[in-house]
Image (cartoon, rainbow, N blue to C red; front, side, top):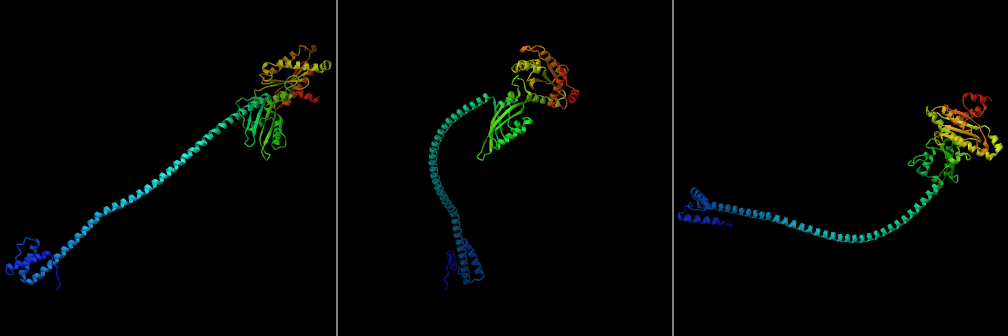
Length: 461
């Protein structure tokens, strides 16, 4: 027979039912039961008993009901246990996370401590390296200071030697009255000493940097020759550079220079630098050694400048006076050449004194000796053509007084030529010479002014 397990409440209900059946002669009365499940059961039993009045059927139904109640109670118990476990899991989850987080944090802290230890070790190593570096740097710094002090002393000594050398060089150049030049051929840069500006009449602060500023000022008649001499030396065809030439002064005239120099060459023999000097030879080149007057070269140069000015200015007038002694040959023949030279010196003095102060040499006039007994005068910037006649008359009067040498009375003839459009310096000088011969032909001791007819008459003769 199948063993049935009864719920405790079912056993209790069965006991109540048996008691009721015994008390009421087999009829069930459970209305007095105070238990809630019991009241429901009693009600159900009454209904079943009243309808069926069969105890066996009632018992089977009660058993089924008890089993049902037992299953529901078991289900509730299982559900409660499952809920309890779920609650325990939920409670355990934060603790697990906290434990996991703590473990992770502990591991991170461990790694951090390891890194900190490594960093501390590295820091100690760096500190030790820095200490050693500072020690070595201090030694190097002290050595550097020592070297600087030694070099400073050497530099001061070198500077002192250089200064003395420069002073000697400057004194030598000043004593020689030369201008020094230094030309860097690779860069084209050139240097001139201050004397250069003095020679050419420029202000002291005037600067030169381009070689063409020098070469471009050379007289057109000399420029090709000077450039050729420079090129020949640069190409190592000559031992040095040496050339005399005319160069344009700041006032428009030309002065004579002697330029000398040598090249510095590299290993291949290419000239990389040239240096030398410029010597002012104007006095020796342009002055008459006997009388001290300007010579023919200088006079023609000044005359060319005046021609250029007259060609560019309509209001600029000038005149050329050509003077010749009428009887100088007799002086040489009777008194000798030494007395003749002394006589020429006295003539030069009277000519120089006869020109007004504003027409003195270096101003707007030039008195020159162009031949044995021939002299010329250039009168620049005339206010009137009569100014030239005034000067000619003053010269003629000056020669009325006898000379102290042998109590000679010398007469002179003067030719005057005025500037004319298109005439060159040589042509004007020739015109004045023609006018002078015309004055001689008319009786000597007088002046004459050039005109076109004189040239025709001279051509006929």
